[in-house]
Image (cartoon, rainbow, N blue to C red; front, side):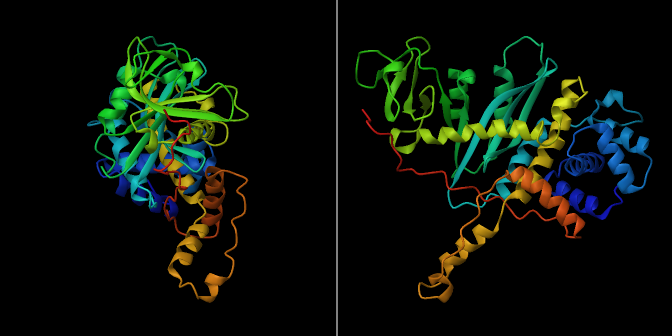
Length: 395
């Protein structure tokens, strides 16, 4: 039941981007994500209370409807009940992001990582990296005490995103040292994407064309140095790859990145974007949706709430992007060299003190209180990519 005009507007947007969901599933997803943004919480109690007041309906009825949205089919009342297959929503979610991706660079940064909710859950997730934030596009939640390999889960997550990204767009997937595996490298390559995986500096490597094995910790031995080259990495489970090595001031350890890109095609500095997935976890937890306080204990149900949080995150980050600098930059390009406005200095953008995510939360609430319609203007990524970048001291 969608009575509020803003909730109706949001439901139309959500319905357009998830055409395969049924009307009740779309209504539930729109209501959950709208309530999450408005309350700053993924709590069933808070969202139900807010939507009940907003729609002027019984809170318990709203609570039951929202609860059934994330339940399994056999846990729901009535006939012909079904459960949302979250994995079928990953591709549309990424397509939604790409439809708003405004960049001359055909380049998409992703990151994979895991996060824990106490002893209850471990979440494996893939995020699009954007302006200091991350937008979840695929995830798998397992019980925190569950034993078993994560390999099948990661492979299924990547498979769910197959063929979504246009072939002309270069996708770079970064991961920290704890997730490195040769099968992960191969899985990413199989999608025609590019792994950008950090490895430990223990072990050995062999430069292509040479016979001597050398120690990885000798690649860059002091800060301020870098190296890149085509190698075979590790004697056991050898990996043919490129290593991009760099050790900057202020870092305890060097970065050793393995990728399938040629040395002149990649830059170890791209790995710095990986930290944005950690910012994304903070947005989902303490800074935003309070996920760390969830009372859910069933992974399948938690995965459906994550869908609502991912849609809510996409909304906030999109609104939190300041489009004025992009307008000014485009205007400057279009004006003739002798145009009066061209000769004047374009005002510099004030340094952003809060993230796109928090900016979005503030802007959404302010816009709705001012009576503005819901509108997602687009995503304007910063220019990360430089195909001419190459590490120094290449062998």
